[in-house]
Image (spheres, rainbow, N blue to C red):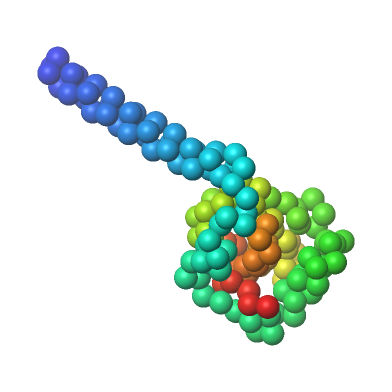
Length: 144
């Protein structure tokens, strides 16, 4: 390779690294600002409502999901204590953006499955509830 080619490649690499570091630090600063004391009550009702996610009535949920809702209301016990009531990271970014620890996840039993299956209920600190039956690929806001 010529010196000119190496120099251009080095310049491009520097630009890419700077862009990645900038994007990474800006995305973290939003979470840090929220974690620094903004109460969940300051979150807009539209954010808590699901920001355009489809909704599902409790009565339209499978019986196992309604059972999981009853367990959540009662505070447990949960069928998978090592996994249920654990932090849900929202890494897919489908739910409204909130600070880490805002969302908790709960298993919805799947008849015939030999593992936890793909169905979950997610609860936010503000009381909002979401249902997924495809392991976080999509969500519906549960209307109570």
